[in-house]
Image (tube, rainbow, N blue to C red):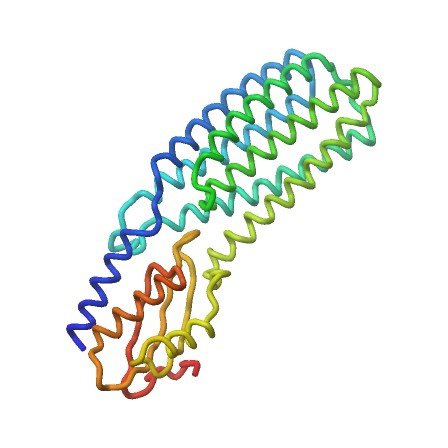
Length: 310
């Protein structure tokens, strides 16, 4: 048993180093997106002050929060690069999920702020200087398209990158709404267009933000990954690995998006070598269930824990 346990630890140490790649490509895309967003936020702020347009000042505030979200995402990539140590044995990969969760919450806060602002404008319409609004909103749309294209070329499965993309998508929708509102005000003097289109954008941002919050919160509270079913794992281990009699006390969760982990007790018959069984089980879990890290307790004499679930 001692030898097989040593092999188990070696295998686990090996899996720590794989599966959660924070690529330089993702980091550089986030960095460029952040610089472009902060750069245009300053331009929009100056334009809003010169034209006296509250809409542009509000959108500058929106872009400031997006720039901050991108900064948080970039920091998450930098921090999750750190190696595992004695105080953080799994490394810092979970920080990416935490950043995505905070980004998702900030999207919801932004959406609520837009709704409150829009309702105030419906009650008390604001006169807007349409030409500066149209020019700066159009430039904003171009910048946001560039930022979105930069981010969308990265890893689409990365929750941190995805939350940053949704922020920028919200900005793109905001720019489109501002352009449409400026045109409707210019041609028809319909000042109600500004708050009504803002409400539509807010609803779309709430939907996107909620998806990110829900997914990242599920990982943070160590919920079972959506593509893993405990009963299926138990049944397939018994059916496909000859030595396995039963599997119980199964717990599965994600370290970060796409990196699944599991602990389980496996009852085996006594005539085979533990090391071979461990290797077979680990290989089966990784190749069939995308589980990169597994901790397995082999049992010959029944489960010693009171809480074992048969």
